[in-house]
Image (cartoon, rainbow over all chains, first blue to last red):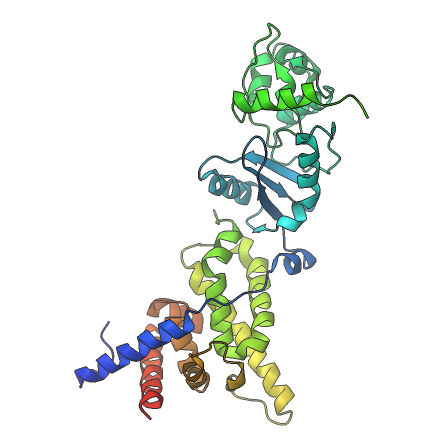
Length: 215
Length: 158
């Protein structure tokens, strides 16, 4: 690792001084232009994501050219895991591109303010198994502000004895809130479980209970 | 092949790639070369077979884009002569107040020395990474950095 020319050691000291001056001068932060829009225009942006704050904590939203594919509750360093999972299962071409999530974020804001009862964004359902897709399709039919039971959802998904499997499928919902698995509770009145924890489930149900009637 | 989300590459190396391109092609062309670098990287990314030296891979692309830009600029400036290598980056573009002299001196280095020095001190690259990015040997990378520094020192004392 020694420099080629070390016949004269004070020369090397001089070189180190030059090197240090270079590090200082060249390390001034530049302002690289954003690339997400050009990547999208070139058809190279497979997964665009953004994070946003909400009454149920920090959320990550991700969209593909097909539609919204992921909505994740973020805890701690959970963002890395969510992004790595999408890189493995959708495409490694994952870029932060907040403007591309403006539509879904606006709808979510309206939902949290009690002004939206149904989401209109296109969805990409690739992060679900077929069974999960059927179960979540059944939950999507539960009206805003209403509740259904695990058994009813399992029946609607075509497996009447599969309450537990339906519960697991709901727990793996990659699009919570938008596909309202929070509206599914035990038939005995118990709250059941929730992918983002029961506090969030209570908050979402409270929002829907207290929202003004149909506009 | 498990590749990290592309954004992690952009976060880790975006600013270094940009500064590297400013040093090589000047701040006017750097933004275009930067965008071309990242689009080319995105295009090839899913087909990468190993994720061991992503930084070296990125700077290989950046180096090629810099050469493309320098050639295009050379054609615009001197339509009769195809430049054999990178022409000098425009001194007037030096983006750093106070560091202007040094940037100018770096811009005036011969192509290989300038590229090697930029990789070493802007991108904080190891000699092995410089060798990958410049598609040369580690020994040549080391020599180019060393010769570049010697020339810069001569400029400094003059």
